[in-house]
Length: 189
Image (tube, rainbow, N blue to C red):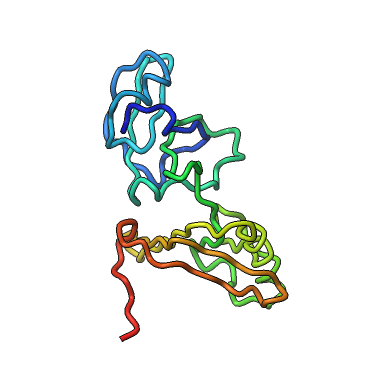
């Protein structure tokens, strides 16, 4: 699994917040770095000057670290990360809460249009944007949450779709994917 370069994509990321460094190996180039056969690595960073491949594991499972938040930040170094399995390179964040500096008790209009400080801070993408992201196809969704001690848990559902304003943004959510979740399935009983 680790040796197939088509499973990797080059992105910009700092690898600090969501990854743990698990080792380093000598490599002649970035392709060799990705092809090193280290199946435990979810991300790699190649240092050309030292010919060193740093290996990283995602703290939230291999699918958990691939968020699109850093994609436009050209000041961050290039790294190689595993694709999510369905060809996508990353998850799109639609809500992110880090502290109480943004009031999430907002009007319907604000929830429709979006608000906050940006995807790396307190943020709500907006129902209009969620509809635009999911109108052509229901996409898988990943819910991540942590307690105040930093313990991370997550749950994935098979699909997620938000209808238009004419339906008052009706949401459809598919079944929980137990093999991609750290929480048990909720029961109606």
